[in-house]
Image 1: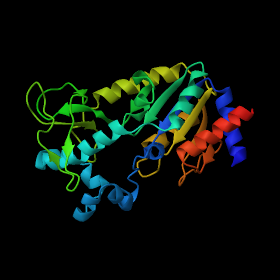
Image 2: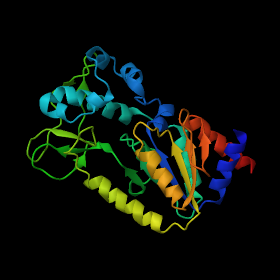
Image 3: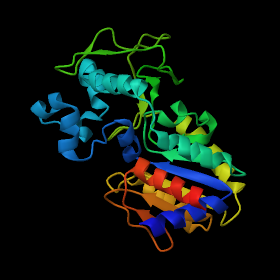
Image 4: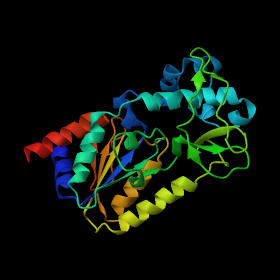
Length: 276
């Protein structure tokens, strides 16, 4: 493992730009649940275990139509949790490495928690491929997305149902929902994410082949959007993939696989960089 950490350090030492790919495993060291498997989800939300509902069942837009208090109970609790969570020191390590590179960093994440922005990454250098819980969209006729900052949701800790009043659109009075891509979600407004995608495309065009380090943290195969993106960028000749995943570290030829948790691996790479 020390050899692989040294290899990763060498890649970062010579890189001119950094792609950070992040899945749910990135937040575990901050104390966030990763919802891996039914048991993991039910440990975080015992009320849903009693109902026999897994993550995919809850992350479904139908609840906002059928039972808004039930829907906002789930997302309101997560909104409060993410607001209260402090990003772990691995975020600072990544920012430090990026600050030494000519082109800095760009984040590609399937997480909706806003932790990268909270850790000081610029909003214009983050692509949230599944949207963000910190933004809301109207279930009525108003097309504009807005910040979730004005809204807080009180959630019953036993039933995980939200207590009224629920977030409503200030323009038309309709119910609001998080701007998150859910399962079977044909109503998700992707406009914010599309702008982010365009920024990433333009940024990548300025990075010369072979000069990019791709550090992927905690992105599994269950929802593989982050893994596929990181592999695709590396395979296109832009640079080397460093995959940090305690359970699924396998990498394509030429990549570096680290079977560690995110913070442990990032600290190991930092130590290798200091040793030179």
